[in-house]
Length: 327
Image 1 (cartoon, rainbow, N blue to C red):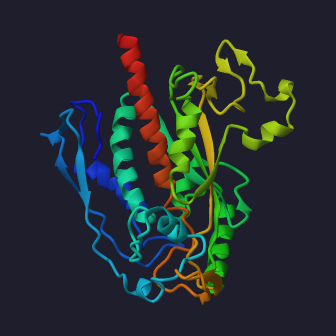
Image 2 (cartoon, one colour; image 1 turned 180 degrees about the vertical axis):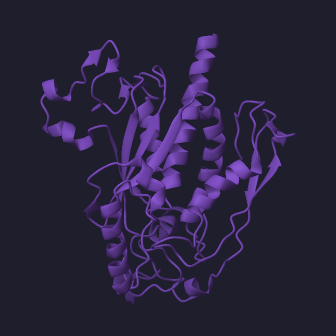
């Protein structure tokens, strides 16, 4: 369900499906063999190819469901998963996979992001995410023409090949990999965001940190600012705009017209084939080896999810700014 979408925006199933296909399982290196069509249906909110201003309702069915591997571990808390915390919070837990603790919920984010993109397109704002690190292999150069040429959406061809080798190694070892995704928003005007509690960077960080596998967010120079002098960190401003962008496109919680640049740290998939120590519901020590269909890495399937969350936040702030300007 998407509320607050303006009316009279051209929107088709095909445009939403294009984004969903990018995060669909069963394709690419390191991906689960599970097959899902992820076919979206627009239930309401669109008439004759245009949004009506009423809430949009989108539906995607799960079709390749197999809960059998979860049966044997239903009373065991899996390390790295939310099993223990969900049980602690609710006193009950659906052990069958899927649900709010599953990466499956990100399909709603990507669908909503596709709608947000349509709002941003009217202002010529573009959002793209790409893999800059995986399994300790770092992209040494950023060539945007390379992103769609490899299965990991990495802008460095040589690094992508090394990442692929790293994935094969991890798969053989029954292990998984983490990495870093960079997200770039271009064309964002100055003025988006609020000065205190709804700072643009705070909302972007919250949106990205709400993705299950994300464990950290950087903007611009990120943690490198802790090692800089003020004379190094400040971005000089000239007649044509900012002359560098260590701020990452945001100052004082408000966009400054430069590119918005973020990075997220993505943790390894917690479902691994190696034996792990844990406890069951009675807090008795047990050993666990997880079977089933799991990704080696959340990257690159998480990339369109990151794009979607950035697009959603930017669309929200764009609409808020337009309302302010009209007032």
